[in-house]
Picture 1 (spheres, each protein chain N blue to C red):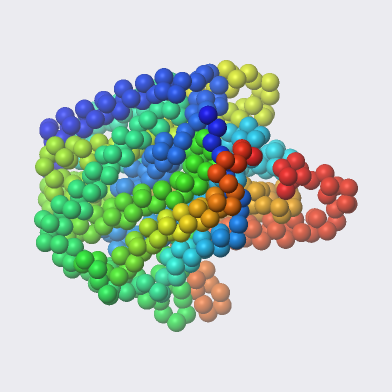
Picture 2: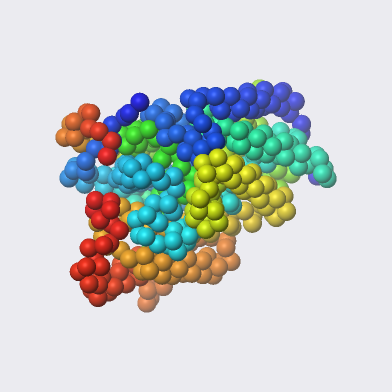
Length: 517
Length: 75
């Protein structure tokens, strides 16, 4: 079986763009200059990003390279169900508008850099804060690994997959670049690189949705090439919610989980004002539209028949449906534009990977190091600890994907979504007037983690959709959402019981009073 | 450089539920026709909700900004 062909022109363009963003990443340290020896500056960009920079940063952060590869891959292999990414990203922004400006204001007032820090202040509970911190770190690690998987796929598609130790050299170089500019520039680096990344992504997608349908004889021809069973969701039978339940719960659950991830929180908290975030809730759907069009690349790949092309056999064998987009790009575009498109994907991996490692480092530093290990750490000690942790986290992700098969990263990321959503009651409901109690929230979190994980385990981690049986009726749904329902029920009911036996004096001392609600 | 804090919550936020319900109500769009520019209904209808949701969020923001005033302080 032949290996993937080398693409010299594409490689030159790819490397030139990669070099450009590397230089920009290092120059980021001097952009909107601040004292990078404080965590507030290194890890949150000094909370100075206005509407435009926040738009690029949040967009670059939330719509990751892996999304750009995996969403069309799912549409390519499974059809309509993969389009859940669109309702998912429609639901995100109304929620974002409701929650984040308020969270931003409270975090700014109290100097919080992370969600666990907010939880610690809001509920006066170090145990609950630790649970939120550990969940955030655990959920983010495989996500970083997946970004490297996205990069691996395009490096292979460029024909750079050598054999033996040489096979991993390009990825290792990319990793060093990422680690170095994150270390020196902090959050400023991904903020500045995100702009280049987005220009490349928008260019690629717009060219793809104009050029490829022209080559294939129009959109109607593309959809005609899709088997009817994949074109819409199968209509459920009488005793089940069927694919409708899966589709809607995946969209809702993913939307609720997205902004609980540490990297989303970090990017949102780095904005310069609450209204910056409100404006962004209105402007960020532009990315969702691009994502919806990108999903269509999955059908274009079907129409192109890349799955049967002998020159791509090696790629599909290694990377499965994730090779659909690279294969389509190689088939449809001239060589130089292949370089642009692949650079867009690879740089699209650098931005979120950098923010994720910063977010994890912020959490470790503020919520574990400073809380438990060195309570009187100085600003400079905090910042150097965070820089070190950002390196370790990325190194962990690199070892993860070099040592384990890519499927392991995907399965862990699936679990990550199920876990991170369990912090919703503590973080989002912590913004409400409800007198939820930390003990109840902690027990709810534990129940949600166990139920969600057990549901995923029952499918051998192959899918996050759990067929819930209610008598004769079946409701297939996203395990994260089912776990969250259990979590919420425990937290709310137990809080109500605890509050019923609370003295008026103790109730008046509830930490919620400190926040004016 | 100080930028204004978020607007105060108003009843207009009820509107934000509209796009959420629309895209979660799967039976309302799980079909192929009518097609638009070759796109089956399932795809163009959900894509249409992207700009619509953006417009609704923008509308709520405008109403709330008018209520809160343009120069409300941080906090």
